[in-house]
Length: 254
Picture 1: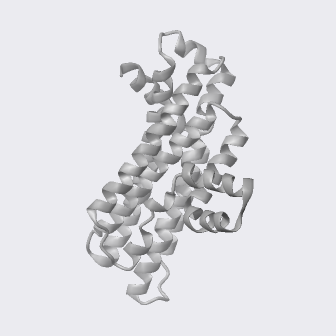
Picture 2: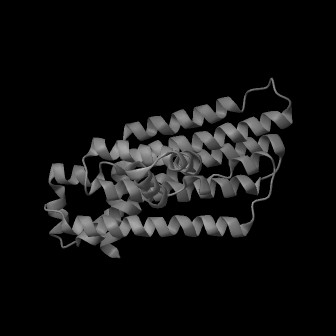
Picture 3: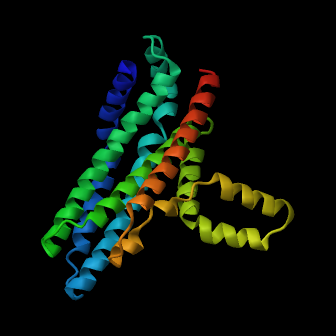
């Protein structure tokens, strides 16, 4: 565990120095702040518009931050040959990979926490109360981002950085369209196309399970059971992708 924390700490410190992450964080904060200034709606509609836009922005920019943080973690270590120094300390490959994963989680949590804090302060200034539904929505977005992080880390062990970036973005987009698009594709396809579509359907995580934005906007109650099921669903996929990442990284020639 000590070695994992060392790798995680180094990963965190290296990532938070990246200027592109600072730029994305500032841009996200500006968008949410600007959204709160739209005053041509009456207050109730304005708050719903703010919640809708802010939660969508948090998810979208969270995805970009997650992929940027994770996509080059292992390839960069290989390119700069620093991985050989780390693995000779000795740090086992599993400890190295899990340390990278944990460090990336810290970075995502820090960025998501700063964005969410601004959002909650703005909402409190308008409603004079803390909306626990928003806290639930942000928590599920965090689980979604950890899942996306595990996917990106996995593909970083088997494909190039550009391919990994495209795959991770594709997973995010299709994961949110899975129920509607793939169900339609399965119903319309036949033969090999239908087989491939079904494969995508069962293998691809349904990221809409973490999206409770519509319920929150319309002040509907989201049960604790649903939250628990969504977290469990995400945890299963995270574990699966981490196990695959560990397997392929252990077999990778360095």
